[in-house]
Length: 157
Image 1 (cartoon, rainbow, N blue to C red):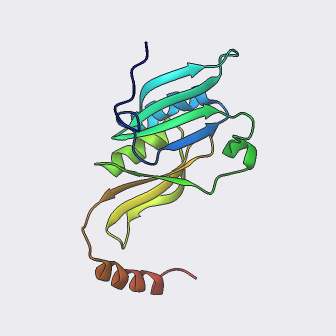
Image 2 (tube, rainbow, N blue to C red):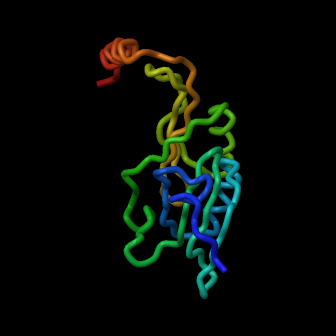
């Protein structure tokens, strides 16, 4: 017999959790394990064997994913995505190398940024974008603003 829930959300799940629609969800799970060290928490297969729902843990975060179906279109079908999943890791250089080795493509190079992070963006083979960051400096909003002015003055036009 099912027990009543003791919390309004499952253990380990935060208020907002990414839920990705992917063409090739089973292959995506394998990629996320190789690229980001994802741990597979659960997988529910549909009668045709495709992924109806899966739950992964990356660092301290949960990501849900499903095979593309119905209105849940994947970036592959839509021709891209406007969403970037922002990920903080202890060593962004190591995670970057791991992701590229696993098959991610560089979108924006990994480099030190004016806001105090070492940061870059990759796209996974399924069309989802991921920023990979490590905070290097703790800056006040004023310091970030001052650095932003300098960065924008020196930006290529």
